[in-house]
Amino acid sequence: MSPPSAVRVVSRCVVKPPPRPRERIPLTSWDTSFLSMNYIQKGLLFARPPLATADLLDHLHGSLADALGSYYPVAGRLATERHQRGDVAGCSVSIDCGGHGAEILHAVADGVAVADVVPPGDVPRVVQSFFPLDGAVSYDGHELPLFALQVTELADGVFLGFACNHALADGAAFWNFLNAWAEIARARLAPPDARGALTSRPPLLERWSPDGGDAAPAVLPCADPSALVERLPAPPMRERMLHFSEGSVSVLKERARQELLAAGDAAGASAVTRFQALASFMWRCFARAWRRAPDEETVFRAAIDNRGRLRPPVPGEYFGNCISSVTTGPVRASELLARGHGWAAAAVGRAVAAHTDPEIRARAAAWAAEPTVYTRRWFRRNDVFIGSSPRFDMYGCDFGWGKALAVRSGRANKVEGKASLFPGRDGGIDVEVVMTPENMAALEQDEELRAAVSPP
Image 1 (tube, rainbow, N blue to C red):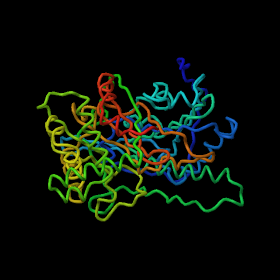
Image 2: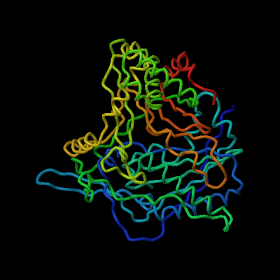
Image 3: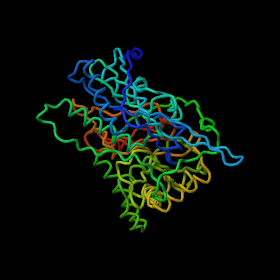
Image 4: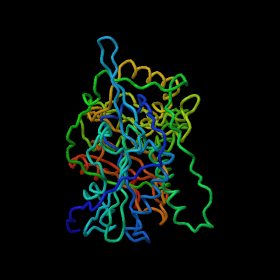
């Protein structure tokens, strides 16, 4: 492939929701903790839609405006309120639902084809140019749009690159919004007599509160949240997409189960899930690729949805952040590899099982006593972090011209040792892996990984 030309942004427009009374929605601890993290950047690659470019942009503009009628916080901005308690200064952040607008950019990638975006091997760097608000952190939502779409024309297709403020929404809320928007867009292109009632449920915008009442704003121990924001440069990384078929994931699960049965852990064997099997497998692969000293410790972490774990449960359409992370205990690298896949899967399972309603509430109370925000320093050496989820309906986002060819992500929140799970287009699970060039070269030679990965 010859080096592509630079991606050119040729126009941009602001999309506003229908007029409505202005309100503010306070950020919870889950929302506020993401103020220093990058915007979520996820994108969908499509074959060329059967619409002229001007019609395509009008179609996306009009359907987004309709979607913002229910999801009006997406068109807002962040606002800071200062608090003073005696000599102690604090602040809280809320979403100012003032109808400021989301943004749509139109760009052209000269000389770039669909095949250039999804070649075998590494994810090409040009993909990073398909996303708006690159480098922005959630705090920047005080001035920048909370949501933006970049429509990038390719030689034979189009890439829709979405950027969403992470203090506004987590992955589940983000994909719920995109699917609701896509359903509206499909209906607009359908013949009038073929349009049925929309099935997407409206978002739940009221923020969760531990006592079940109105959510109080999460207060940070500073006069301005910008004091907690870090903008550390990211080192060069390589990214690869690995595909695990349904059969491959089943083999990993059965292997972990059999190892636990052989070790006399029948309870652990019966509890093994597909997630535990694949996540622990990647943990061990990363540990081998890093070639750390035998006594160096490693930890597994994963983002976890709190909605179904709280009592009472929080509805799935809750629009905001409702996630935490689960963490295994530290284990020496040599021990992780010597004890086998089954032991690692059980360790991941115990971390997930311990994340119950009392644990979630205890963490919320601990955050209120000592507030903080995530920064890149939170991702420590030798830690493996699993994000995203194959349960997100990424390929359901049909805007009226068919199913996406592939899902890709931008540069946001990429660190050494991070893996993101996506649904496979036609089944199975895709894993996006991020590592330094040296460590990725070692990972590519891992025999266990090569045996488990399926052809795309």
